[in-house]
Image (cartoon, rainbow, N blue to C red):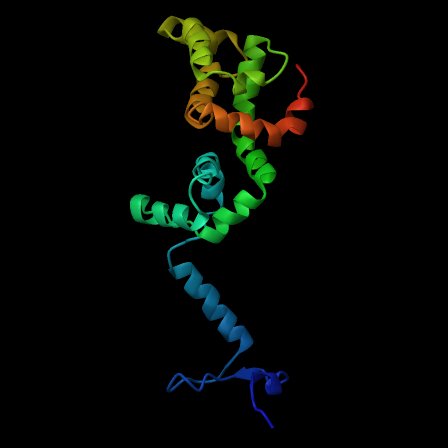
Length: 191
């Protein structure tokens, strides 16, 4: 007869004979110790970070494996992001792009309302054209002040968010993202 843990399923005391002087514990004690340990160690679940970095991970994945991206982030940037987490995000790009877009969409709507745009297609155009239009209208201190006073949405803040989080992404990658955002963009109607 083989003796193993499966023979003792109904026994709520678990013992590890490999650890000397180990006292038997029940499953609840083990679970509580695990949770306590998880709270005392460095938090490593960078679920939000994979979304923030997703456009760059998406672009890098065209030339690098998820493992190579993970290694680069850890060795060069000190960021722990597992290859499994990266692969999971890359395997569902529609979900990843949509979650990323959640962060910039309110700013895109503020700019679209300000421009009286019928769509959000300006997000997929040239960064230089976008910056030129913005800079002409609010690029000077008087224009920024007037924009804050006269407009319901904070155009200046919205512009900063779009420049920092969206227009820093390569145009080719933004156009690829558009394919995953089409259903969302189609339902946006000028208010």
